[in-house]
Amino acid sequence: MFNILYSESASEIIINTEETADTVTRASINPLIFYGFCIGVFVLIILVILLFLRQNGLQRKYDLFMRGKSGKNLEEALSRRVAELDNIKESNELMDLRLKNVERSMSRAFQKYGIVNYDAFKELGGKLSFAYAVLDEENSGYIMNSIHSREGCYTYIKEIIKGESYISLSEEEKDALEMALNSNIPEPTKKSSKASRARAKHTEE
Image (tube, rainbow, N blue to C red; front, side, top):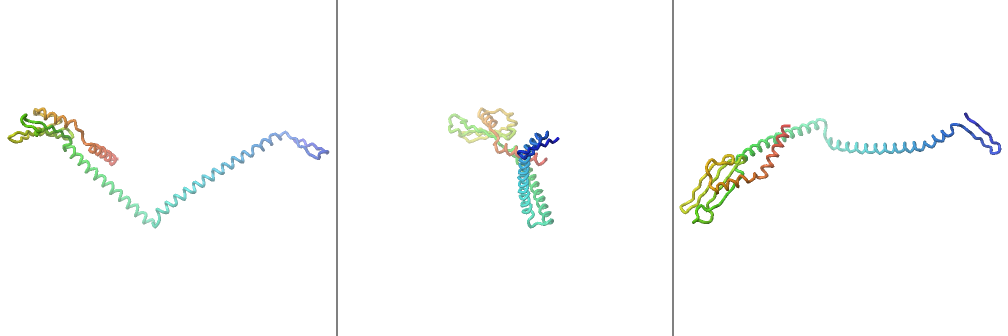
């Protein structure tokens, strides 16, 4: 209910209501709502500007891609790209096949060696005699023993299978074989083998 009081001396009208406190409270909240609304509008404007700039960037890229191209030209360009990708895939498969052949050849090639120079006879110096061991990746190969004497030079070959010889070896031959067994496969061969396996796995996928 409203209570209206008249004051003749001050010529004022005083309105007294039970809802005055609630009205004042609501009036004090209105500025906060207004500020929040302004902040929200400002954020939305920034988002719209960012979307507009992104759309312009995509439009420029699209125009650059479609410049001077019709639907038919675009189809031809895509067909050429697909054909190029097929050619690249075939080239990679051929290269992998050749690399595998090279690796198989390398596994049979002699990759480890050991050589020991010695004097076969005490009266002869210079260590012109030698024992030379060559092995493949599986430690199979040969030992060549060249014996130098006054009468001439004699060379003997003994076969090595899986790092062992079925014929007795001299001390120099044993040392040469041990040196070859302890020598490592060249690092590039190891790396190329790993790379080949990775490419083969990728091609299968």
